Image (cartoon, rainbow, N blue to C red; front, side):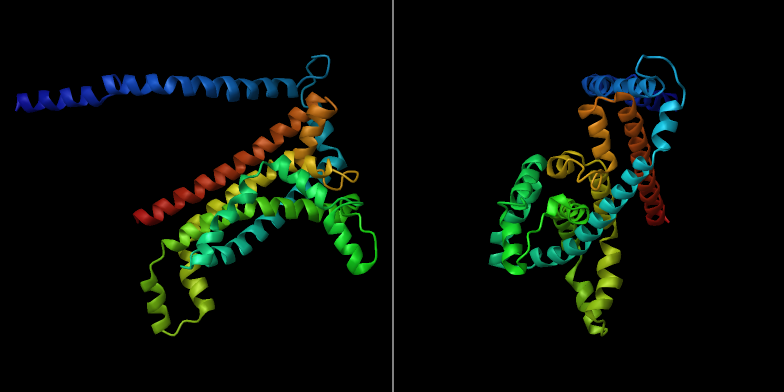
Length: 303
């Protein structure tokens, strides 16, 4: 009996925190932890400290926050960001579902064209923004020339508030669409065909099959796609700034674009830090929602 107890204790010691394997694992994790501290934790603490100071380095408390949050311009940035996110997510999900159904079909043409779908996702955002600026140029752009041939009017897409916002939304959708399509296609391929065959035998229509079979079985993939595209769109500054520079005026100045302009164009570091902290809080809220939903789903599966 004592021999077995000693054996169990020796096993616990070997698998405990002080075992050789655990020490080796922590040793391999040390470079990553140091990088996280150096490039994330330290800048975040420094940014929070700067947000409570003025340009001279004097402590001003919540003065910078009152200044930014009290601006109508900032709330216009928030409104544009929400419009940007909602439109991009809706377009990517709806059309991503349709395209995912197409690329999951067994066809030689589909398999040949499949690599082309990834091109918008592979191209760097600044490069694709310059491409769109060239296409939509008021004087030499092929798109504006085509519109002039059809309507007989000169259309300056990037110089008008509404059309510039539509151009920015379409550009981001064009980039996000391949990710939504591929991720949803992965979810669709996991659904067994026997489920659809049983539904057809029961007389279920295509609409009922979608709402009662497809949508419930790919809801995990759908939720991840929505969360990822929301975060990407919310933090997108390089493509928006490269395409319109937030203009005309502030018509396409989202929160991320305002952060970039205040920090790196006008060098108003304290305002930029405050906006960055607000964006970080929004990202934390999205991460908390994701964690809560995934935990709830895990509890459902265990029950």
